[in-house]
Image (cartoon, rainbow over all chains, first blue to last red; front, side, top):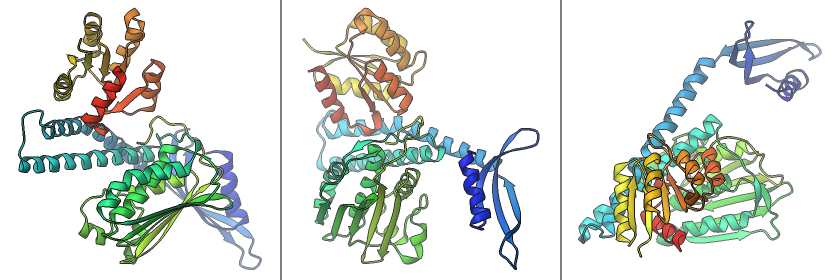
Length: 307
Length: 122
């Protein structure tokens, strides 16, 4: 752990007089490294409130971490392996639909389109699983570069336009004037924009309204995506960013969706120094807000890009 | 004269899908099943474009690309890397070896792939 970490840790315990719970990379007496989940609490003098001593409890979680890593690596490997047969299914379905192997009738066309769509969904799921494993293994890259967020948002909107039209949604976008270009990773930011907008479109019934706006604040650019959709049930709002979680009301309505979108969005935002929040009422709609600091994202080396 | 495309791909279903579709589109197509035989085919066949997979037995795509660039006739050869591995190190290596098109198979529709191939051969 770096010096900064310990400085913050001791400040919190000694000066703020707060307990701390954190993973700490530690060493045994024999020099062997291990990971501890530690809780350190200051015990205060009941008369003058000064710190008298500390109580520290730690649990060795090295094994758990290894198992978790092995599991994530397995998911990554399996997802990669799935891509080859998925490509084959997609390409052959496409060729049949094109009539490359002879003319097909209407019913055959419908069935093939179902196969093709099913395949597309699996491709998306595999990509989401790969992104998840990269975030968890810490192998993903953050490559900030000067990015025009308005341009990026417009591109994502264009991509969603067919679904917006198909559902006859009333769509509005607004962009603050003079939005500065900021240094963010365009790929990661795109994943965030794309997930929030496609969720709004997916979970708003026909004829509803969806709004996307970019606003300039003192220290951040904020993205807000607002819909008049199904909303998130109150009792499940605290679970919404959990991996593979999908709210009951949308599970009943719509079978598509991986339960990975918001998990990815939150991980990306938090690992790159931003913040995300939402308000939602079931049956009324949802508004998501993401704040990306004007100072941009911090660069991070790694081996894998998210896609 | 038909343009010639060399597909280097070890997965049989994918290789034949590419061969069938590209032939239908009016290209002449040869398939090699690994980097080593791809390199040999390149020398005798003199293709206008190579579609190159990365993970293959005997010799992988990256090694094939390195050796290809050492061949006098292979220095400027047009290559599209077509793989399911998106790894930053591999992408960077491909760029270093003069390949700007690095496509993930499962993300590419056949129709878009054909467009890309035609653009590349313009």
